[in-house]
Length: 260
Image (cartoon, rainbow, N blue to C red; front, side, top):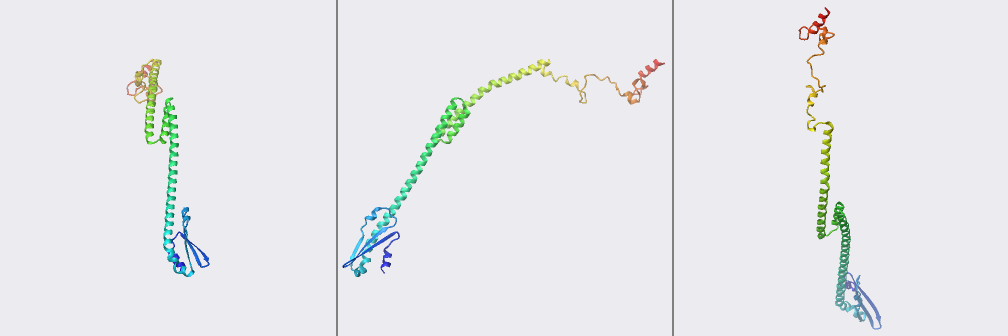
């Protein structure tokens, strides 16, 4: 019965220590609750509940005597434990928050250092007129910039691009003019060497080609056909008495009249 009744008084996480000492006239029992895992040293300041009496008296009134004090002490210990757990959680959260803040501050410092380094290098390159390299470093700086710093970087890049564009415009104009003059001089020199006007080079070329598209020798056709004698079965035109059109061949008549 004793332990069944004690179980009803106990709470999970809280132990009960019983110290029983025998005296000449009876027994002395000291009861002390203790919370498991409680780090607060205040629990050690609790004074044990002490009861003295004969064995019969303790059997009859022990549980009733310790019931109220035990509940009060147990509640106090539980509150202390909950407070301690909350304090630990708060401390852990505070530590985690501090670590998070420290990490964020460290990252911000590192980004600031990189930003300053790229900006410094880009400014020097822009000052030296190396605008392409300066723009690249401005872009790198922008990767480590804050929102406010990004506006500054954008303005610097725009200025560098503007200067680079102006430099190319002025550098290319004389070169373009020089190429144009060189082309004109080359064309004039070629025309001078041939003695012809370049615009008239194509004139008269049609006379060098026949109607069938083949290139001619520049001589006119006399209308004779060198193949007439061969077509009539004669050795030459003088040996043919008739022309292809059926008329008398004057060359044949002249030859044979001289022979007669």
